[in-house]
Every structure is written in C-alpha cells, then in structure tokens.
Image (tube, rainbow, N blue to C red; front, side, top):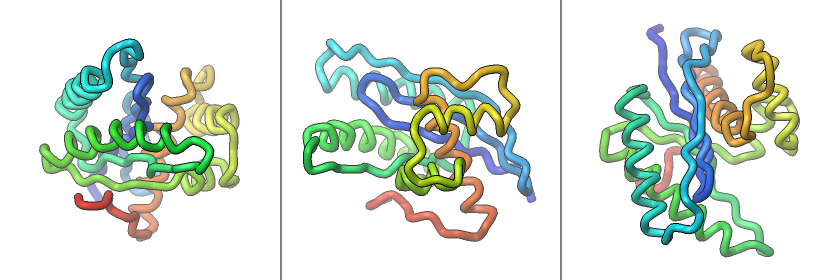
Length: 171
C-alpha cells in the first residue's frame, strides 16, 4: 500500500494548528507540524484571507491526499464561538476542495479517544500522547499542533481500519 499523506487541521481564528502525517500500513510517520498565527486585531475578512493564503502554501508544499479537520462543536453557552469557528472551517474546506483534496472531519471526542483512549482527554494529555507516540523530546507546543497531529492520526487510523469517516458536508 502506498503512503497516504494527511494534513490534520485544528481550525482557529487566532491560531490554526496543522500537522502532516504519512501512513504506510500501520506505521504513521510525522512529517511536520506547526501553527498559522493570525492577527486577532485584524478584521475578520482579513484573517480569513490570511488563513486561506497560508493554508494554500501548506497544501502546495506538502501535497496531502486528504485534509482531516475537527468537526464544528457548538455549546449552547458559547454560540458566537461556534459561528466564528465555522468561518475558519469554511475557508479550510474551500481551500482544500479547490485543489481537489478530499476532506474528512472528525468529532473532537473521537480524535481524543483514538489517540489517548479517553474521549474527554485534556490538552496536556493529548500533547503527552503525541509526544510519546513519536518519541519527541518535549510535548508539541502550542497544544494546537498536538491537536492537529491527533486529527491526522485519527483519520489515518480510520482509513486503515476500513472505518469510513464522514465527509465534510457539501464536499
């Protein structure tokens, strides 16, 4: 089986985490990870345009076959956050779709379960799990990087296990 390259993305309007993982059989290989930092003082449209440009550069550089994105989670106490996150996710989905890259989405608790065995793991648990998996000297910082790598890992494991991940709506 040829390697499958997955770009995991943890969407945000201040910090968007990203991680690239190659899968061949059951051996995931960490390729790269980082964050896209957006100017939180800039207008929403400017931040979205900047996110689009930065993501386009990542897609060009790493050429993933799949983009894995965390599903939108809405809590009744914070509806504004969900709406704002929806803007970032929309840019991510559109950017990938324009390039013909398949997009898969995963619920946060499924990602956490896949990586730590606990669907309600905290950020530090996720960081330590990613650190242990790839024998990193220190946990990925900021936590958004670990989350993005975990999303890519969850996607790859789902693909290898024959579990069909839901596609992003309308993609």
